[in-house]
Amino acid sequence: MKTLKSLLLLIAIGSIIVSCKKEEAVSPARTPTPYYVRMTDAPALYSAVYIDLQAVEITGNGSAVMLNTTPGIYNLLNFANGIDTLIATGSLNMDKVQQIRLILGPNNTIVKNNVTYPLATPSAQQSGLKLQVHQDLQPGVAYYVLLDFDANMSIVEEGNGSYSLKPVIRTIETALSGSIKGKVVPPGVFATIVATSGSNSYSSVVNANGDFVIAGLPPGTYSITVTPIAPYNAVTVNNIVVSVGVTTLVGNINV
Image (cartoon, rainbow, N blue to C red):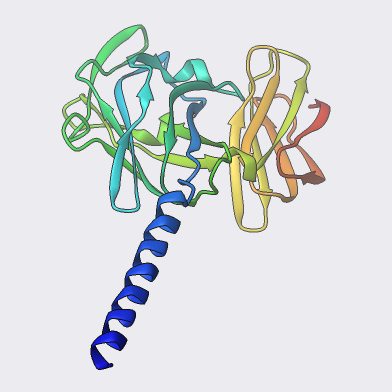
């Protein structure tokens, strides 16, 4: 009798194990997350800033994924005032992005006063430029991340007259931010624009036509201050509401 009970118990346990294995076998795989990395830049006081981008790597959940990168030499100043470019895409089987790593080649330069200077990139060709992100992902939802270089802050002139790249880069989840767009008139007047909300400030400059865009702004209410060159006067515009995924138009600002 004991032998029969033991046999029945073994059969029951075996059935449970087989059932669990079948359930595991039919469990749906995680839907990959489409991931897009774009690059933009704040205007800078150089004629050109060239970086030699070779690869983009994503790290999360203890693993690293190399994205499909468009390698090449990029002039960061081509992507100012709301212009950006797609540099890498991929599908991620992870629920959190912790780091984006940019791997650069050796051909990095800047142009200042019509003279081209080598731009040293310490460790960027070996370990890469590492950007901490900490972004949660939902399966099957596309995510767009904007890398916002600040060329003015990123380039350091050394004592011997050489230049080094010590990048200051904001990572912006574009689905979680908005922007402000406007125009300073009369056209052709150089001006800086600073958007302020609470203790946070974001800046840009106008292009040759007087247009400006300040992107990657967290939602909130902003004031913008336009500071033109003399003899024009500074102007402040208040109560500008920025919403997620929306470009707020402020129209013409007369200085």
